[in-house]
Length: 128
Image (cartoon, rainbow, N blue to C red; front, side, top):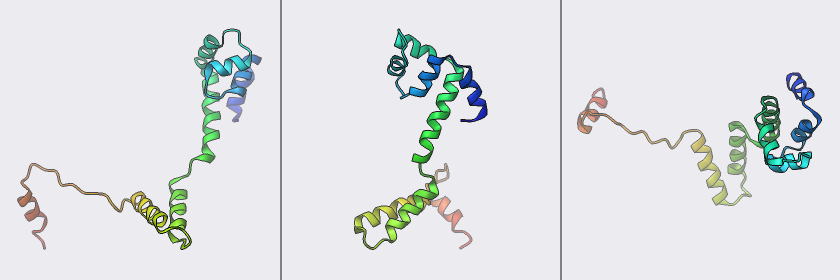
């Protein structure tokens, strides 16, 4: 946790800290586990608190960060599968397709214009 977030956390009352520590994505359930008498209202109130929201967002981002691969990590993974001769051919082809799509190999270019098709082709091939 960053120093700024730690300061926000330190300013929370004990039950709010417990709410943050036990956060599982469900406001009412988390408030109940934190010991609030009216879990629904307390959960709503806690999620309207800007300090709690900032802390929970950071907590969520940190938990998800290692689980989400970057574009380069996905491309390396697909390349590894594609080049592994022990993999099934359908898996190698699927990896090849995904890798190609991530590189933009299969982008369909569409000519959209008010100019008639024949004139556009003539203009494009004029220099050939």
